[in-house]
Image (cartoon, rainbow, N blue to C red; front, side, top):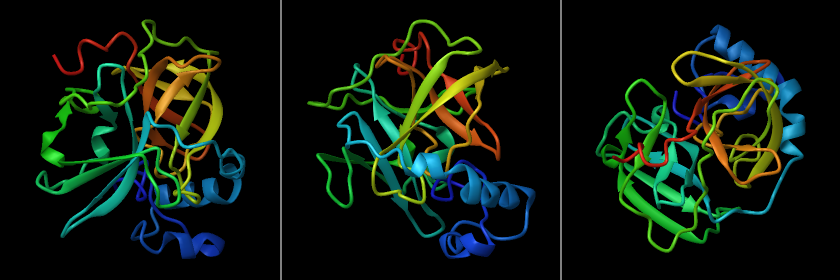
Length: 229
């Protein structure tokens, strides 16, 4: 599932059923995981509202076969980065990037087709390489995080998907294929969100997937000049 249908985990039920009616079909293990996260693990995230950031965008798309939202962010080079799985399956569908989005208002609106994004082979990363003019952006960290590193994530996750929210996590382990594991679950809608070093503005990764007790991000460290070259 693409997000809001979010980190590829997708079904809610019971007390959360009203929020899930558009998120999934079928009683899969992922459905149970996400329901558990919503009922237990998202309370802290929901209390972590922060002001809208001109470097972070809510990404929306809709077409004949799919619709959803994720998070994306701009780098200092003017590149818009998100998770590759967030993009629509039909490449001609339009992706809307709403920077500094908050409850229907935004500072900048960029529209491109899903096929305009470049996918990094072997990684859940997609980038819009046409420079975003007049847009500030994040610097990518030079070094990958080590286990124990504290990070923060800012994105547009449910259930408060119309405001920017923040939570802090710790890196648990470094995985294969450029992934690292975080000790916090992250809600649907946060795929594509920047993972930043705590106490710094440097981005070390982009949110990829989440489960009931943890989540995964894909490393971006040292890739500023590789994403679009």
